[in-house]
Amino acid sequence: MGWKIITEIKESNIVVAERKDDRILMSDNIIYSRLSKYSIYTRSYWDYFLPLPSLFDEPRILLIGLGGGTIPFQLGKIYGTSRNVDAVELDENMVKASKAFLTESIDANIIVADGASYIKGKKEEYDVIMMDSFKKDNIPDQFISNEFVQNAHSALKRDGILAINYTFSVLGLAREAPYRKKLRRLFNLYTIDLSPTLRNQVFIASKSMLKDEINRIIEAKFPKSHENGFIFDGYKRMKA
Image (cartoon, rainbow, N blue to C red; front, side, top):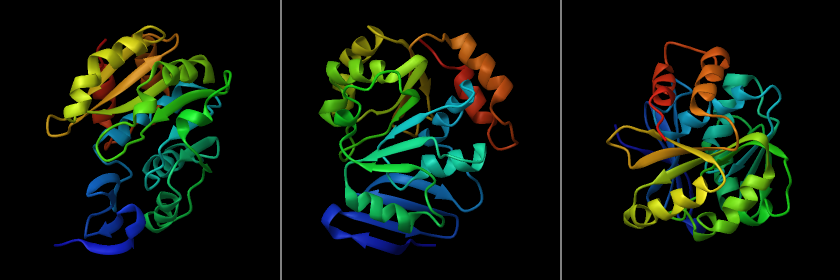
C-alpha cells in the first residue's frame, strides 16, 4: 500500500503522510517523526529516550527538535503526562506540521527558538535534555560546539542527563571522535547501538550517574510491557 499525503508545507519541504500501519513526517525527504497506528513504540531511536524520565521523581525535560512530536506523544502515553516537557523547535512550519502529524494535541510547552541559544545562561533547570535537532541528515553545527556542550551541562541538574540522537552521515562520521571528546570532558559518556539497518546511535551523557545505576533504576521504574523489551536490552548493551 502506498503513502497518502495528509499535509504538505512547501516552504520547509515538509510532508506528512500515512499508510495502513504508520504515519511519518518528512522534511527534505528525510524522516523526522514516525508513529505506528498499533503501538506507541517505533523500534527506532525515539524509543531509547523514553526510559530517561524514570530516573527522576518529578523530571523536568527539555526536548531540542520537536519534529512531528513523536517523543512528547510517547512520553504522555507512558507516564500519563508530558507537561514538564519544554519542546524547542526552530521552524514554525514544523510546529504547524506537528499538529497534522499527531491525532491529538501535544502535551508540552512548545517554544519557537534555536535550542542552542535557548539554553544559554540556564543553571540546573532540567533533569533530562533530549537533543534531536537536524538539518537534513546532520546535526547543526551549533550543537556540536564546545559552547553547547558546556551550556547543556550547566542547564542540567546535578544528576542530569543529555541524550543525543547521533546520525552517521558522511559528516557525522568525520565529527564523531571530536564530539565524543568534547562530551567526555564534562560527562560520563555511553552509547546505545541501534539496529545495523539504522544509521543512528544514541549518546547518553550523564553528569554523575554511571551505567550500572542508570540500568538499575530503569529496570525498577520504567514500565515494562511485551512490546518494549528491546529498549531494556539496548540499555544493558550500553557501552562507554
